[in-house]
Length: 239
Ligand code: F6R
Image 1 (cartoon, rainbow, N blue to C red):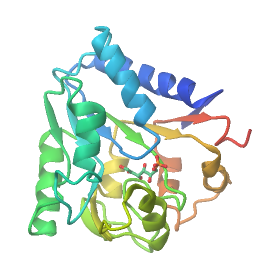
Image 2 (tube, rainbow, N blue to C red; image 1 turned 180 degrees about the vertical axis):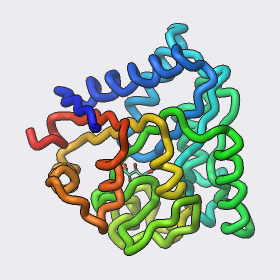
Image 3 (cartoon, rainbow, N blue to C red; image 1 turned 60 degrees about the vertical axis):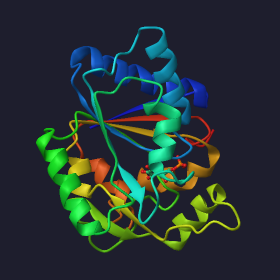
Image 4 (cartoon, protein in one colour; image 1 turned 90 degrees about the vertical axis):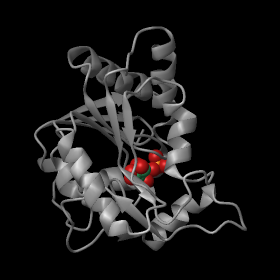
């Protein structure tokens, strides 16, 4: 069952999503949280930081698993997801533990197996934040004819490369492959918080909720998940 909450603005959507995470941490302080990068969660992470500073959220027993990371990429590269998470969240709140697929790992397959083992040892995800790509990707699970259940190395599609090229400078090399959590691991999250914001997401949102399971839209698997909360702003919802 998907609960849908339509918010007036991006800011309201971020506050609403933050409320869910705050309640989750109150209920279970040692929650395992799945986290995303990209433009959408920036406002949500700002909420996390201000609530943490106000003493309203405590991450000291929580563990974070990020969905994905470019590969190969240096951890200190300005566009690595490690840098993104450090800048927006990890350096500002008090997570007990954080885990991002290692973009520097010499063997991506070994790193994916390690990442999957770490996630399993943590007991899987209690709450997972997801954004959606314009092509329907979740994490970096790109449209394909089959989807690995566990973490894997993926070739990014032209569409994703173009969407993310805005972050890379003209002379910077943009990685064309990435490591991502698999669809099975995403699906195993006890509660998924899907945050969709901005007018550029109108088309994919329409397609996602058309009432069909499109196998070339990875996010469609979420339609079958028993506990998804969609938090969407009016712009993405079509006004
Ligand atoms: C990033 C991730 C991606 C993004 C998606 C939307 O960790 O998992 O699936 O959620 O590309 O990105 P934005 O929010 O930039 O539109």
